[in-house]
Each structure stands twice: as structure tokens, then as C-alpha cells.
Image (cartoon, rainbow, N blue to C red; front, side, top):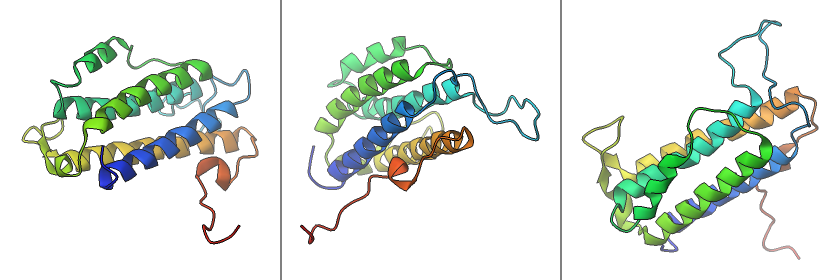
Length: 177
């Protein structure tokens, strides 16, 4: 992995996953099945908290799929990720474990990634003729960040006193000591 754009992208993803793990640790016990209710009506269109946790892990699976498509020969062990069940719910500890599993694979994939590879066209289920690997990765990051914010918002709705530092990695002024 280079220290260029690909390295910066991985660093941003690491930050997002670290903040997600932090948010997961703030979930009140006994609330895994909770979801927002619109006008006090049970609306099946909202993720339950435990479904949202699993979906966050699925978002990371998207990174793995993109990296696998780009480096199939070097990432043959990624095929075992297909054994992870899809479309279910999970508790906080399982979500954290799955985030760790996916991140270790993502780290492995990014170790091969160069900035030149970011412009490679990778076919996807959405764009069969392919799109730039960078576009796929940035799209996956956007999707992940949106659902991380959804978790933050759910916590607010549950009365957890979350604030900006719970959501973002805040950088300190490097000039101050």
C-alpha cells in the first residue's frame, strides 16, 4: 500500500470503524431489538438496532468484494468471507467481531493497492461494464458513514448523551503542545 491516496483512504476507513466500535459500545443493554417508530406506529422500513449493526458489517463486506475483484489471485482467502451469513441481525459483540474480521481482510487488500490501481475499471453488479475502483471504494465509504450516522442518531433517540466526538475523529492542532 502506498502512502498516497490509497493510504489516506484506508486511514479514513480505520477512523470510521473505530468510531463505529465506540458507538456500539454505548448501546444500552436490552435495546438490541429497538427501532424508531414513526408517529408511534411500528414501521418495518426502519432497521432494528441489531439489524443496523449487522448492516454496518455488510458495508465492510462491500470493500472486501471490491478488493477481491481487483486482486482475485492474491486474495484467494477472501472467498471464505462468503460463509458469513447475510441479512440477519446481531448483538454488539458479534458486530464488533465481524468488523474486526472484515477490517483484517481490508487491510490485506489495501496492502496490495496502489494509487495507480484506483483508476482500474472493476465490473460490479450495479455497473457491469465496470467503474473505477476508487469510485467503488469511495461509494462504499459513503454508505458506511451514512449508516454510522444512523447508529449515532438511534443512540440520540434512545437518550444516550452522544456528542460530536463520539461521531468523528477530531484532529488536534499540530502546532499546539
